[in-house]
Length: 170
Image (cartoon, rainbow, N blue to C red; front, side, top):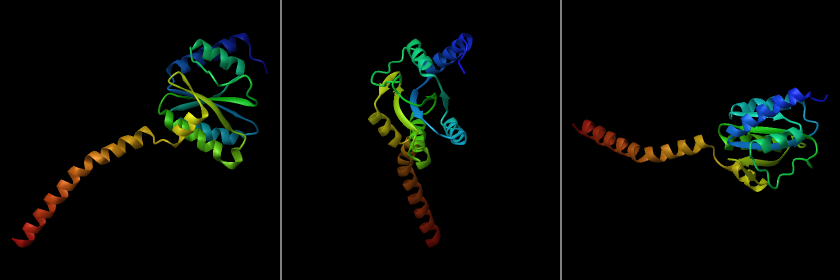
């Protein structure tokens, strides 16, 4: 069913606002994905502070243009099937990983990532694949904290061992 001019204006305004504050925008296309599977995807993306919307190609192109987001090398108009847009306002690596894992599941073989924009710069599929394999920000921070905590923990264990030996001898 065609959208009214008023509804198109509302959709454009919302998309432009979301694109302006997004850390990453990922483009997908799919055919024959069940509604239940799409609900699962949206639910898992919500945990990564990412919104997933299905948008008409023409409206998507206009919204990206109004938000001054370049999509060099990403041919949205030539893409077949339904265009889905994941708008990550949180951890962009977690969003990328979630979409990549969803695309790898056998039942979702018609679901494909075909481009993305990170910090308003276009990303190739190779860039997206690298980000999907990268550790999340939380994983990196926790690893750093473990590394910083390790020497202190060794000192604590050494002092405790000395205290235990003195207590056993005394």
